Image (cartoon, rainbow, N blue to C red):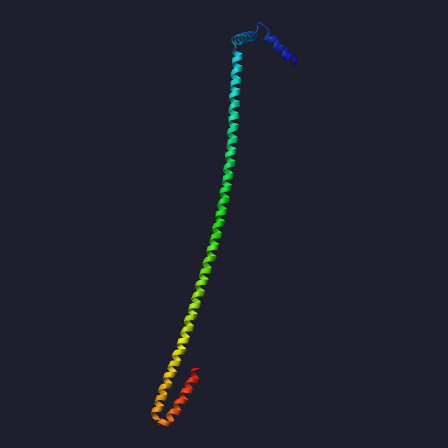
Length: 173
């Protein structure tokens, strides 16, 4: 391996080979470039490019942080909106239950009032029917008494009348 490097160095510095002239031309070119300040310009260009890349990286980092903050804000707002929606749903369910209970109470009250009114009407109809039956019985008794008294002599009519009235009173009470 050392022999390989020794042979390369020999070819480079051998004025008979083309490598020697390439080396000389390269050294002259580099010297002229150094004298004109090309290396400084290249360094400045590389530094400027490095600074631009660094600025772009910093800007990308700040944009990423801003995007993460926005994402966190939107996630927070989404959670708040979900919580608000859940609260609204719960409130609506509670309101529906309250309304349902209120309506059931109203219906029960309505049914109770209607039942009471029906019971009153039934009781009234019963008392009316009893009164009508009593009146019809009294009328029938009076007609029967009148018919019997018309057929009987006057003396026994008074006794029969008293007995019939007592019998009617007993049945009516």
